Picture 1 (spheres, rainbow, N blue to C red):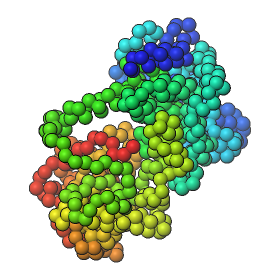
Picture 2 (picture 1 turned 90 degrees about the vertical axis):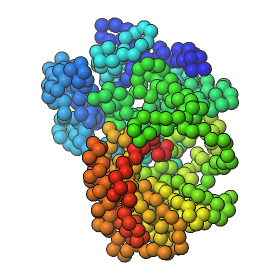
Picture 3 (picture 1 turned 180 degrees about the vertical axis):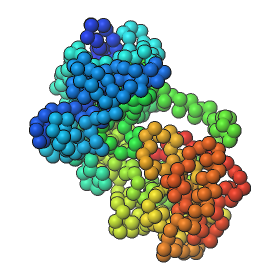
Picture 4 (picture 1 turned 45 degrees about the horizontal axis):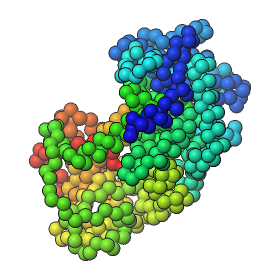
Length: 554
């Protein structure tokens, strides 16, 4: 079926991803590089908001590519060179840029203006210009690396191909007005307002015209499919959205696209990258790659394997099917379960105010509704009764504590007397840990040990300072409500020994364990100490830390 889609929709879209260099040599587009155009509020000088002038580099072939600070033409020179000279005569320092921590700096007069305020000034969303492309040779596709992939200045032909896609999209919308589903971004109940401040009102605004044309034609083809095949391709389509939008960056040292949510936020990208979505052997985030991910997941379910502590994998032992009950529901109300029925609870509560998952997840809602995967009511806003704190205010802390208390009480109700409750948590703000501890103590959930689990190793390239990679795993038993108390002066000091023990062992194993990871474990150890239980037996007994590589939530 993937081959049929490539032969049909992929072939129809292929002309819009053709490229030609200045000499007329035919090529195939791999990446299109766009940059935000800025007009200085002080002197009206027009310039491009390059975060850094170095666009990419490849140590294997000893080359780097720099955007000229004056005209944005591409300069290709030796890897590691500090500057590059453009054909226009201007020399550019590759580490410089026209953007400093989200603020555009006019190269003419030095005036500084925040990119997030541009929509207020111009009353429109950001404007981007195509300035460069990365291409592969024309002809039958194969895997290309190093010098076989060329980064160069965009030509008039490259821009004309995009204009052709823009006209094709307009014609398609005239014929089918709802080919791009309605996608208003909810305003009520939001924590992060950056999308609105940057000028975006609809999720469709986050896609270029060529990206919209691709998604519209692909969606039409998927809608014609039936049964599980249609659902599988719709899931691949949903995943594909994160690599086909104007919030994708370029990991220059790796020469590959950096998807939306590689950092869990709607992060504005002043120099977004657009991928050719129909390549099968080149590029990160193409639709064929998204389909193959779903295929691999399906195959893993049929022949499941699990990692071993020795670093290999082994088949999962097959067991006779038992009873199961899979629901999407609220942990604060599990009335379908009787009292004292559960042996083990594995859960993953919100990390206080860390990540607004409902806001991030809503990005996928318009197309999921379009495919009939979820109800149209989901378009109206975010789920009600969310547990996550919206801020660090007193009211938000009380909301989080009350909600977690209700959830923990319900969990305790359904647990057997000898059950275990295991969950993961991370927070560098003591208020988040204290609120969690108060909810546990009030509901009768008693922590007995804590240990670190590697949770975010897959996003290492995009980690920010003070990010946590090792989650704290809390192992708890059930007891009487208020059987233990949280100290009035709750601090992490009581858990410092636990944090130091794990830090020593993990670093000795050659793994990173940052000060933020240690601080997180100190708070976890303090909760265990407050409940009157010894610190993690595993750290003292010499058991090795466990690594987890899968993503927690979408």
